[in-house]
Length: 311
Image (cartoon, rainbow, N blue to C red; front, side, top):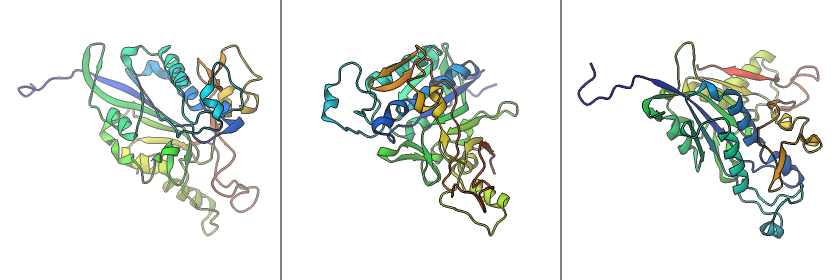
């Protein structure tokens, strides 16, 4: 029997949380295909996996203002493909993102919110209950996905232009480990699709260790391992830079030539209402010397996504 005044919660709901980092890195002609690539990957993820969850919460971070030309305030209709009038996501771009997500998830199960800081994400993750279909139930985070930039020194870039990061020194403690779903058959996982989240900052070739020891040290002292330890969940991350080129089918060099009929331009940036064409991949470069560990035949760090298990 529950204590007097205690409300029994007979259900536990599973939440998907997606965090979209700001695109305040690329400018000029590189901005057109890059600006909305993180949002496009978020839409693709929701499209593919939303049915696994009872609640889908999507947070996006705004970048710093960047104005290249005074013509930017006079935009009407389609603008030149290589212009970069905005460092921020524009209202039209945000609206298109919201519409795309609502194709797949009913509004009563969907939260879309601009995050002013990581506190907004943490507050949602740490909520113990959720209202779904008129019922108040226990709530746990089943999975989290992060789409954005990253570097080994600060971790995941929430918004580089405004100094918000998630990594070794920033924000990790704000989410409680008990907020994650941890039944043995369905343990929560965290996915970082950002450059080198699984890599240590500024440890170059160290031939005093054998190669396997060296790679393990890079992993053990990474943001991904730190987060896995604090949240007590398995984190999947890349030691190398991520390649978002598959977002637009044949890579950024062919993003417009491969026009499919669903692809449009929103304030001069490429968008597709059904999300990215394909997932990003672990790339070819890393923070370490790209010419290898001890010679040109041994890679500086291995390619792929690795599991970082709590220690």
